Image 1: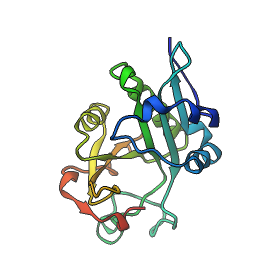
Image 2: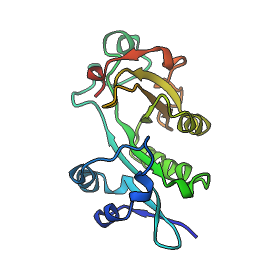
Image 3: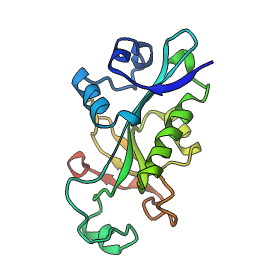
Image 4: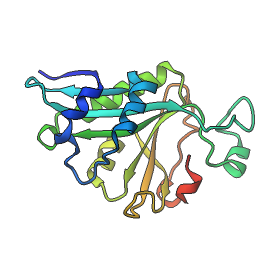
Length: 195
């Protein structure tokens, strides 16, 4: 039986099977350690019976580095859509979610996402978001089944100049679903506009 537990620095020595996929970003050790220090409760692994890491998630809860231009923040205000369309309110973010090829289709991605969504609700976040390569059709389908929708397309986001979809799922705080929109695939932004 598998179990979800907090991710630790020693897991960096055991998570290679998860990172062998060409669509998975692998970061430097300092990046992972920063997450373990700042958001330890949002970094989790699923460990198999044999002790192998089958999946992991790195997450964080944050907002844009500047205060809301209009207080209190209301995503339904037209001024945000016109003047500050890229302002990010308090939200949860999935930085990395990956499952080892041998452990796919076991529900691991859903379990880890739900754990982060629960933490986002506990911290009164507006939504959970993530970036996914536009060519990663399997992941996009999975996220859509889990209630995510495309908010915008970030052009040339990755080092190889691939685009990313910024996908969002509203949380309990956003009862009226004001932080999501239809047809996000058609709204293109430059990486410099994304915080």
